[in-house]
Length: 381
Image 1 (cartoon, rainbow, N blue to C red):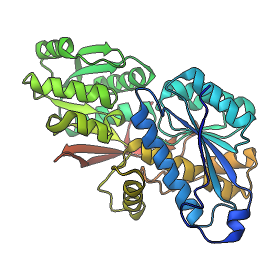
Image 2: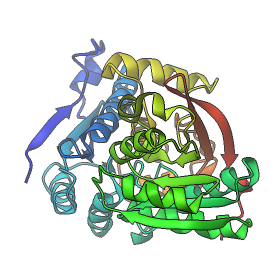
Image 3: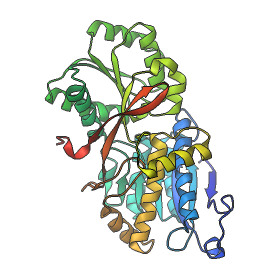
Image 4: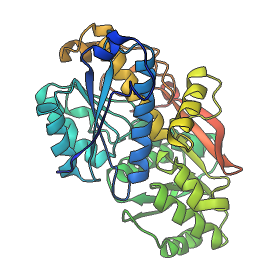
């Protein structure tokens, strides 16, 4: 098992005054993310976002007069390790809640353990529909795959008018769940999928798939993947002379994608949770605080991980205690939650955040506002 990465109360480094808060017993929130391995860039972004939230909470006096302490583990991009650290957080570290700042396949390993132990669990950005299906203690802050796929179909068919799509799918929970929703809704809207191909996680050579795209001659490419695969694909696609519109998702939403893809990222459109151009003060305050803390721009996983910490804190405040039953009842009833990752109208019966889907476009080497789709306007089954 990976050792504990760090335990953060963040009182001393923030110069918090107020002896009462500093001396009070901390409220411990567990957090795991892929801090090593191929997804380490996302893991670090997620952790940095959570740390910014802890700092803000403690600067404001903590919750119920107690500081928040983040207990952090590396899941090493491994479901077995995610299960191990979830057990350790609950059984040894005595946390009041667990937040997964990790991917769907690792989050799916941790969520059932929290459910079995009656500990609130929040998936910060993992999209697979089955995660919240394990029980009433499991919530999701990010956008459900069913919703994000439907939003992608609406964007492509209704807003861009592109009716012939090639669909590229990374072969894991993230890819298959998004593809299933996109294809179902796209075809219902009159779109035609002219090519559908899967590729393995970590793929670096997309030239065979690009040859297939050239033959299929689509109007649009719905490419599902993470920042490494996404940057390789987009760069090789443009270098091959194909200028077809590329639509990505939150896996593209990373400064690393922009860095690796360079100029070839220009014009790529993604569905995600973070609208950098939002005029809401909570967004702009977060973007500034994150840049100062992390030394690089925020992304979707940092925003949703930040919001997951604030959600747990708000549930404790509303419950007036850290009793787990009171916390999940409070969390389920939260409405109009002003999250950085988009205002949450409510939580659904399956404890998934109901919120707008941000549409961003790469312009001048940065993500900017392109559109927004309110989940409540989508025709979801």
